[in-house]
Length: 412
Image 1 (cartoon, rainbow, N blue to C red):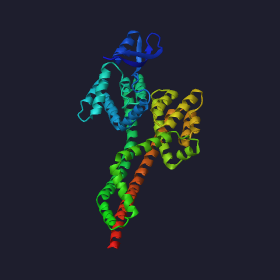
Image 2: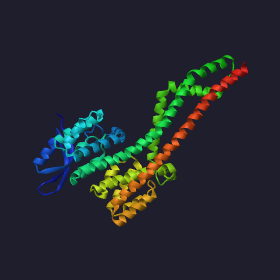
Image 3: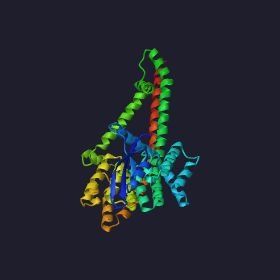
């Protein structure tokens, strides 16, 4: 078996000191056993990247793993809730995972994950270390929360909290998906109608007009060229759309919030709605990590690792340095245009009252409700807007077909 490298943090039994380092072995169990022989009790362990994802490939891998985690939020919430329910019923952790693995309703990905986690548990690894080896399912927030729950002896409460957290986050994403699905279906129907007309009705009409030594209407020729162009050049069209989306996202991530463009981008109504969702997620993340026993700076570090938005991650990194110097978190947040100004005011109240964790929980709940209302309004707006756009497209197609018929009537 090939040798692997693992990064660990362990406590020396004789002195209580915390040590960290890396060690190569055939498996995590061998690393744990080797450290135990020299008087070290492992607190945390994760595999070290072997270099295969270094360089330009690493951001692509990280983006793909983040996409997988977003897609699996609801499935992960169900797994955490299932394990917690079985533990609450009296089953040991390994048996709880085995029971879920035996369920025929689980997907192939879920069964593979549960099988690997069960094997890691049998090797003696804690649940947090086992989950850390699956970045396509669990991020640093999940691992840190599980690790803190294990150290506090409250794994059950931690699993229930994780299930609730991902259930809420997944529910917002699901509502947005449902809201966007209806316009997407209507747009697809409109494009299908455009292509059908471009290959059936319009070519026949334009041929008759051309044979009569006349020029077909301009709108008809444009619709005809667009429909046939989409069929003949669809790979390039898809590539162009993807290039525009990725380049737009890259440019948006590099907008300076204090610039004129940045103030407009982060200050428009849609941006404020995104800000509410951003604040709710950040506040809930910090509240759960703080409730699990992590200091504020450690909680901020974990939050920075789990946030994909470059500007917000930079703001949190700046906050870590400021808090370590003795500055209040609310003061740093108040200087930023990324987040709702009310967020900084509520943070300041929590810091002054000495109940920052409680205030973060209240902020998360408040902004979560605001995000839900925003999502519902967006869903209510997208439906009629999609119908109007489809009606416009169908109207253009009807006119494009009617103009040649009128021209043929004049020729007759």
